[in-house]
Amino acid sequence: MLLDPSVCEQARLTRDIRFDGLFFTAVKTTRIYCRPVCPAPTPKSSNITYYPSAAAAAAAGFRPCLRCRPEAAPGSPLHRASSELVAGALRLIEQGALDGASVGELSARVGVGERHLRRLFEHELGASPLDVAATRRLLFAKQLLTETALPVTAIAAAAGYASLRRFNSAFVDAYAKPPRDFRRGRGQAGPDSAIELRLPYREPYDFDGLLAFYARRAIPGVEIIDERGYRRSILIDGEPGWFSVSQIAGDSALRLGVQGVRTAHLGQLVGRVRRMFDVDADPVAIMQALKRDRRLRPLTKRWPGQRLPGAWDGFELGVRAVLGQQISVVAARTLAARIVERYGTAYEASAPAGLGSLFPPPAALAEAPLESIGLTRARAATIRGLAQACVDGRIDFSSQQTLADTVTRLCLLPGIGAWTAHYIAMRAYTHPDAFPAGDLVLRKIIGEGSPLGERAMQLCAEAWRPWRAYAVMLLWRSAG
Figure 1 (cartoon, one colour):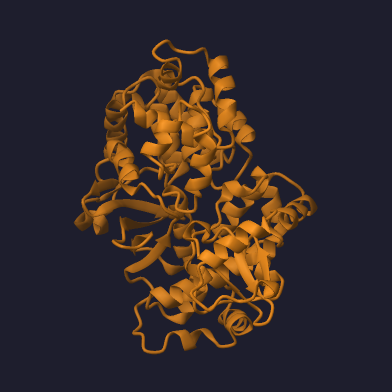
Figure 2 (tube, helix red, strand yellow):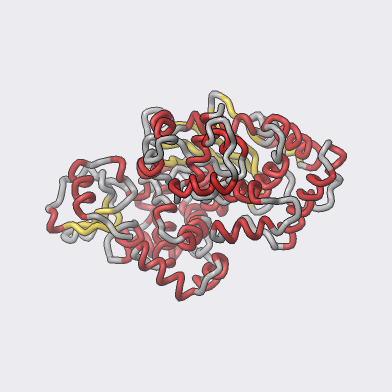
């Protein structure tokens, strides 16, 4: 990824928060890399090298700064990667794909050869997939050491280290002291106790807008949105738990609370929640691109912090998308609630949080007589077909493909057309360029009351690439 040294220099000298996490500053004399907002005295320009990622700086032999804490920076926006393949691989690495597997296995999950994936990473990130994974583990472990009271052994497992010895070795290499030195003066919590973590984002961030979107679609017992924020029950690798997300007053960050989840699953959970709430987006870059269109310009000014609402579980989102075909949001929500009531399972541990139910996994719906809860025969068959495809492995929401491949695979399933496939791609896979061109609401808005044809809508939206999904959210929002 090419960096403009003059832009980086100005951002560093002014400590411009908009660039936090978009690049890192490495100081040749100290061999330390920092965030551009680091409060330390400003080094001479001649001693500075700029890197597009923390992994690139680490691969070049620089250590993370203890003062500005690179682990506390917003994540690098995945859509800044020029290749969908790199963005997909980064999502998998965030979920721990290289903690116990090889780069070859990772490349197979994104559908390319290992050598090609390595070449793309070096070109776009200045670091190999293994460098990226190692930096992710290190910085996530540092965050857990700093923000929680988890035992060091539990943190090693949560961050994806194969052993405590490797964990200690990584910290000594990076920080010149072992992990336990960061815990002095802290108490210790049990490995399965409630955990709170900070999820930083770049301003502006429209958290209220996200909550309003989720609130209209919340399934009783599974999700709840109130003055405290967002809460939902989850299954992660077949084990139940629940989490909450709220805004931290006076801070550009969300507070993630986790209950009932084993620490070994913590890294995967955090990665999925980050995507769900789109905390790593670069809103300035997105809105600057979209406001070039006169029809979107007033919307970017009205909602400059618009985010792309993701989904906790791809299969659940797929079911919701099928339920929402040609009916209102309220009606689809009612049908989803019936599915949970009939085929979901109780989760009493989350009941005090206003929850108490778990959405059914694919196996529970693959042969379910869904017509009995009010679904049409065709829609029930589509949901059963989607469930069976997940059971068989023909559809894998944990893997990553390009947008085109994702849409093609989904459209092979009976009852799923382009609109549904793009909606699933937009929210379950968080593809920033997904675009349901056949959506009637969008066609009416752009046609100013007279719906555009689908082909005309696609041509109109070409100017919005690679952020058509964000344009969709703005336009839907403007329709009320």
